[in-house]
Structure formats: C-alpha cells, structure tokens
Image (cartoon, rainbow, N blue to C red):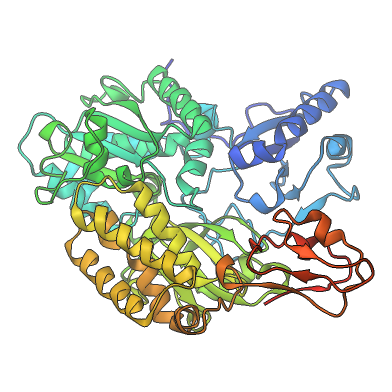
Length: 609
C-alpha cells in the first residue's frame, strides 16, 4: 500500500464523520507505570457498553509530558477542536468521562498554561512552544495514518520532489539548528561535511542511547512520535547521499523499541522506506540496533564501535564520523531530538525556526523536569526561556514549600545553577558561562535539604561506574576524585583534600580522551564554585549543613522524651537504653545514623543535629 500525501490531508477524526469526540489516553512508559492501562480498558468497555463506538474514538497516545498527574487523558471535541485534560484518572472515572466528558466528576483538570499542544502555530500564548513534542500525546504512535494526517511525510515529499541535496543542507544550515544531544554542534555543518565526502557508501545514525540520570526526552519522542524521527533520517540520507540508516536505541526502552519496529514496518509498507521512495530515484532503509545501557555509548565514536560489534570505547578525533565513521565510511550522527526538528524546518522554512529562541540558539529545547519540584514532567520551551519561568511557572515551584537551592543541568556531565542565577535565560552559551551545559536536557531540581557535596559524590559515582576505562585520566582520576568526596562526606577530609580535589578535576578536564571524561569533573567544580561553604563545613566543622551525610550527623533524645521505649524497640543497632517513663539515651558509638528512632517517636523527642 502506498499513501498519496500529495493530496490535501485531513485532520485525524475527520475520516469518520460520525466521530464527535476523541479521548486521548496517555500510554507512554510513565503513564503505563502509573496505571493508565486499566483506565484505557475501562473507557473502552464503557464506550462499547453504551453503544458509542461510532461517536467516540478512544486513542492510545504517547506521553503528554504530564508525569506529575498520570494517568492523564484529553477529551477533544472534534468539531470545535476544544479540549480538556484530566489528571490522576482512575478506572472508576470511566463512566463520567464517557457520558459527561468528565464534567463535574471531581477529576483533576490540568491547566492549559502548563500543557498547550498547538503552539507550533500559535506562539506567545503560553510558555511552552511545541515543535519536537507537537504530536506526542496527540496521535496514536502505532498508526501511520494519524501521523500522515498531521503533515507527516509532507516534508519528505517536498524534499524529493522540489529540492536538491545541497538545498536541503542549506535550509538546515540557515535555520541554525544545533545538535540537541549535548554538544550543540551546528547540524547543517555536520551534514555538509558528510555530503562533501567522496564515497559510494554513507550512513545516517540516530543516537537514541539516552543515559543521563533523570532524562527521558528521547524516550518520549520515540514512544509518542516515531515517524518524525524516521522521516527526518530519510531526509538526512537524501541530503548527504546515504542509503542506510541505523537507530541505536537503549534496550531498556522496550515500548520505544516496539513502536520503532512498528513504525519502520509501516513506513516500508507505505513506500516511505525502501527503493524509489515517492517514485524518485532515491533508496533508503533503516535498521534498529540495541544499546546495552552503557552511558559512554552516547559518545558518537563509542556508539559506532558498539554498532560494529566492538567494545563501546571512544576514539580520538579527528577524523570525525562525518569523514570516517561507521565501517570507516562518512557517517552523520544526530540524536532523537535533533532529528525531530528537521521536518518542521523543511515545511516552514529556516526563517520561521530562527524566529524562535535566541540568535545563537534558535528553536526550542525539550527538558525533563525532575527532582524536588511540584510538577515533574516533560516540557518544551523556546531557547532563552528563563530558569525562573521553568521552575516556578511550569514546574509550579519547589515541593512542600522548601527553598530552591540549585538545578543540575546536563546530568553527570553538567553543573549546578544556583538561586542567584534564577533569572538566567537558558541557552548553550549562558549555561556554559555558568559552568554547566545543556546536555541532552535533564533538569534535576534541588532544595534546601540537599547536600551539594553529596550531589557531586553521586554524579561521580555514576560516571565512575559508566567509564569505559580506556584512558587513565578517566579510569584512575575519577576513582581518586570519588575517594576524596567519600572522605569529605565521611568527615575525614582536610583542607588539603579540597585543594587536591580541585587540582585533579582540572587535570582530568584537560587530559581525558572523550567528552565523558572531560566533563565528568563538572559537578565537582560547579559545586565547589557555588557552595564552597558546604565543603568547608564538612572539612573544618565536621558537619553536613543539610544533614544528609550520615557520618556527620547525630541523633539525640531531648527532654521531651516520656520514656515510652518505642525508639529502643525499633532501633536496629540496639543503641538506645533507658528506664520506662525516664528519658532515654543513644550510645553514639553504636548508632548507625539510620534515623528510625526519629521516625517512630510520636513526641518529637529525637533531634537530628
């Protein structure tokens, strides 16, 4: 079957004139984990039982980005296109959803200023502006017809029928699109390098090996809009002269993998992949390769070696993959989010894209908001949006009314931005000037109860575990850094330890082989630059100001103790003693600082110091 997208495409739902309402059910990984499957089943049963299958269309969509309120659904009036989004939906809400559209049912309503899916065509109405996530949560990702009905494959048709390869590269170059995987390298320049190489064999690779702690942007796109990535890869192949594409995806993303395979199969059946696409002379096909969860394989040369069946280790550059990549042939490597921008740029033009964001960082950026924030989820905002708007408007502030302390951007390769920089406009250059980086888009919010020394230790532990071990600065240097941080968090660090910590961090940045090693000291250097007082407190005063580091805190029983003995009964180390109805005491030499005594005391008699 071949679909003629040259005809005027109709919106989803119009194919069946009897459909009055579409109920979109968020069936991404986070939604399924939160219990959306029984909600979907209950709604389907209700629709069937009431004989409303012709009037109400129930659609499983990808992630809407509203992780804080899963399970979520959106009810859309097909005629007016008005809609309402409900969160924390339960199976027992199905009847109210189907018969009353959720009205007056007590289900949580999600405000549209947080989630506004139509912003690609309506800028300025809300903080978010959806290009990459335009279809996520809006279409059935397992039905290619829904993608086609939302301008799907029209960019590919335009490219193959109206543009030469050089024109395509010129459009991407003029748009200013930069790689969204972390480095921010100009996408057009990368494609141009590959296109100018004299070779009959070239490759296009999609890096879907998302490994940052707290990052889930690429997963959401693959689960909610896989065809946007496929279409962009075909366009990239045409532009650079490649006929083979590879999607390198984490095996830990089973739903994304499943929907990718379905999308590739559907695209082949429709003639979008394979030979003579759109009756042109261009051939292109895509294979899917699994990553085994190695963080280092997010680095393009390590990823290429993994695809080739070798150990996932990086190599020194140059030559860059655009010149000598997969199987030593010219290779373009971009991540999921980068590709997801391409089709919109082709359809609307480079000037449209450059009108969004900042001069040096045009377009939007998808962020995964996580940590101590009220509205955890997936957002997409124009480059240059302030951190304050992201945290306090979209994220609705810090949990439990706590004070904002910092936000870690760029994952273990990034750094922290503090409250003094809360009005920072987020773009590549600004983050770099603050000692952080864009990274793939993870944004972990920290509050007053977080210890920044411990945060640095956590990220170093992750990087140490994920290092391929090829180069000495990363393999040995990060091991020494981690040991020093453990010493400091245990109360055994000295002022000399702090000096060694900073000196070694700078050496590793300058001498490590790849980006993983070169950026691994960033959390240490960033926290030392912004929270040196906490490091000094750990070293000089032997105290953790946030009272997080176990070996630097102590529990004491105050005069509020009534001698009930509950703390002693629950103490795992049996370090609490005392007579009934008399104040109890804690033997500090036996105390393991677990905090159980404080948790079980009903009289708030156990103090943490």
